[in-house]
Image 1 (cartoon, rainbow, N blue to C red):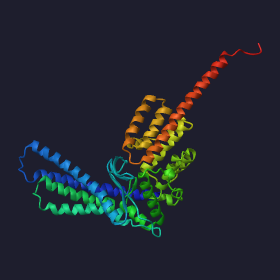
Image 2: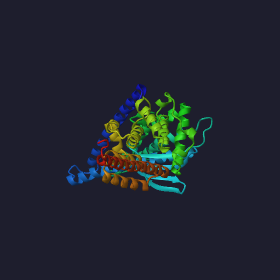
Image 3: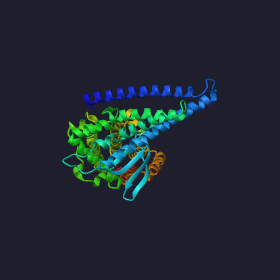
Image 4: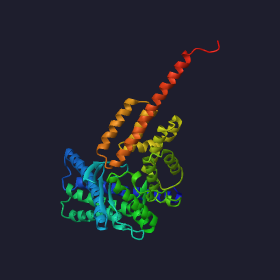
Amino acid sequence: MTKKNQTKTNGGQLLFFLIMGIVGAACGMLIIRSIRGGVSADIPLKQKIVKIVALFILFYIAYILHVILHEAGHLVFGLLSGYKFCAFRIFNFMWIRNKEGIRFKRMSIAGTGGQCLMSPPGLVDGKMPVLLYNFGGAIMNLIIAAIAGGLVFVCPAGSVIRAFMLFLVILGVVLALLNGLPLRMGAANNDGRNAMDLMKDPEACRVFWIQMKINELAARGIRVKDMPQEWFTVPGKEAMQNGIIAPMAVMVSGRLMDQQRFAEADELMKRLLEEENGIVGVYRGLLGNDRIYVELIGENRPEALEALKTPEQLRIMRAMKKYLSILRTEYAYALLAEKDGENAKKILQLFEKAARTYPYPGEVEAERELIAIAQNKVVVEEVDDTEDKDVSSVSEDAPVSGK
């Protein structure tokens, strides 16, 4: 990551913690006032505890409601901008449009509470509508906050219902600010930053369009190796500093993996992880995960595997432990590095369980092929070991000539 990007990230994180501190203080004061208000000072302790628990539950419900409505905002304003529905995910619950219609699936992505994926309209002079789609979530949060703010005045003072409405107001404003203000926070750009980058950078807009089309085709079961070749090009060095454009290089490496061009994929992934660019967070973890797999089915060197298993890499893999590519690599590691068939069998069962509800059938097919490659390597190694033992046995038993 460049120093410029790092400065943006630090600024975004500072604002995030500042806003969250204000929210925490506001919600704390609200809870205290809700407990004291509307009841006598000598309220029984048990009743106070019940009310505190109820308020915390209502706060969590208000948060979930805003997450759902935030993604619904992207959907509504995306449809108004000419986009078509592709997928809607809240936590690990996902509704996706495939060739059979809209189906329920399960998928979780570390660091995200929800996601609305849509099929974009065609590019016109290299542009497409991006403002309403990207700002739609923040707009919806503000709408809900405004409605809840109006209802506050008709709710009894000190009641949990009034507290719930105030939670909706506070969280709505906060989420609108955190997503609407153009910031880079932690691993990725927020919606506001994406909108601004897309408006001023035609290349970012083109890549964003390609990424959305890849998601659309993947939902229909098409593998990345069968998608248009011209979509998959590694951006230039300067473009790779952009947080929207940089993930395209990760998709190129993913296509090479799907084509089973492992040496080329590993060379590209190694370069992407070593150079300064806009690839961060989950994307870096997926690159590292694939590099471990390539090493396992290749030379399988213990020292190389240890070097690839950095603390950060292991942390991301733990956070994405139900993701198919992570399970595939864990399976190959148990089978080829640890020589632990029982553990490998357990991991394979977890893989099959996750595959049953995974939203992208083409990825399931591709991952099963990679698992088969690891299994075939075990068979080859066992055959080689048997042949070596047979040759050794013949050599020891053979008569010594010349005596």
